[in-house]
Length: 224
Image 1 (spheres, one colour):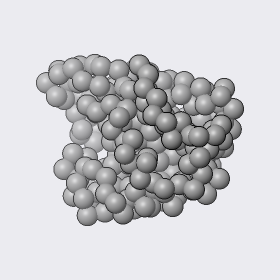
Image 2: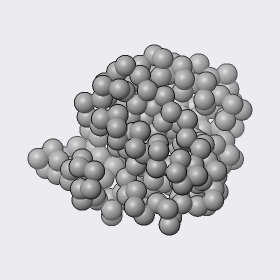
Image 3: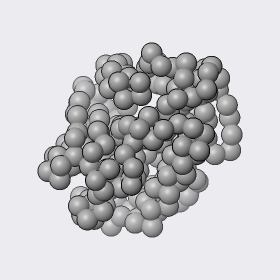
């Protein structure tokens, strides 16, 4: 695969015309380079026709981090369960994710072979945007994350979103987003009819080899 750098994203291009795509949104303070090594370690059989897209979040002030400027999909005011959330910023982030989905469709990749993925804050955006799609994607991959704007989801969940399979992975010792935030999202999604597969691991706010293997096993049949 060829690594292509651009202002908006890093892309791993297959050797042949892409027939499937994974769009993976990084976590707070990182950038699109963060998950390139993970993608290369997945060992997917369709890698010769699979494109990976790693968008860069815009640089913004993050309230929770004392107003420091860093790459972030939206502002974070707190991580309290019922705390204030950046609704406008989340909507803008979902629009960015949608633009990358539309880009892949325009390049000839069917929606049913596009996975929207993300880690931490990027995973929150993947859940928010993926569950509100008018046409189903191949899947939503949510790593070490939580469900933003949960109260509005039952009214905004589309039939396509409900039918899209979700894989959630989380570290049992996550010191940034406790595993309870992930399991509560899982339980809520299942309660409104979403198909959610769950794995947890003896790790912190990170990615481990066992998780990468589980991701590969889940992705392969959905991108075939």
